[in-house]
Amino acid sequence: MARLPHWTKRRDLIQQILQLGIPTDVTRADLLASSPPSKIRIDCIGGVSETSAFDLDPGGTGYMASLSLTVLRKPFAIAAFDLVLPWMRSRVSWLSDPADGDGPRNTYQFPGRHRLEFPRDVAINHLADAQQNLPVGKCIEGLLLGYGLESIPDCFKHGGYAVGQLGVVDQFGQEHSAEINVWIDRSAKISCNNLNRPLRKSLVVRHAVGKKS
Image 1 (cartoon, one colour):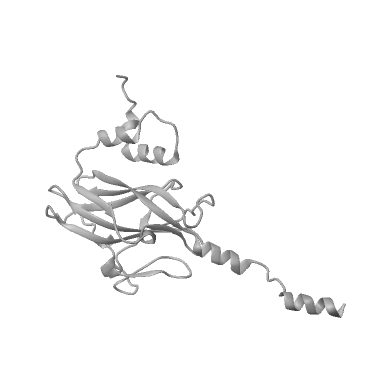
Image 2 (image 1 turned 30 degrees about the vertical axis):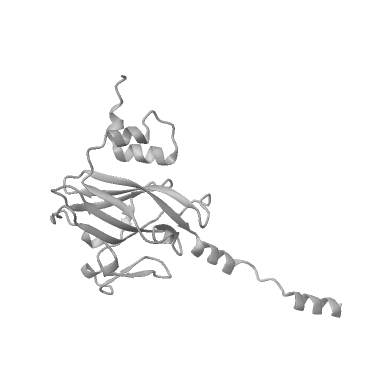
């Protein structure tokens, strides 16, 4: 068996290559086979639109994932989260804990003109704590909320899906990941395009003008 190049040990890099559809000798099956036993089970729960990528106004993309995380082995603590989607060239910025800032407490807010808000108790962002070991069987459910400066490419249409990789990084820096289907929400861009569209005279007005001429 041929020796694989050193870069194939970079699981995050392999995941991005596979997401972009770039030809490589390393398959998803190889990636899974080389993975150590996961210490956490990652499941998407809730409705279709609760795990989504959506346009922000005036730009950028919001990310929301409705998750159930179950600890399978100890020791385990959540140090960080990660998300990879086909168009991403930079990491997601996860919304910071509202209890740590000067803004409205107990409310996570997305950036933009029309601030989408979620109560703190429905989110799991603030549960990432590398110092907090979780017992086996512990189940965490809630919304993971973040945003990125990159816009969703136009080839991803409203109501479609993109396949992504959701990662949970443990206190030792090991990433445990699962494939997720992300619903594409372009409603903000559609609304903006409709508002910017030139107004057309109604049939009644045009008919009246035609009679006068």
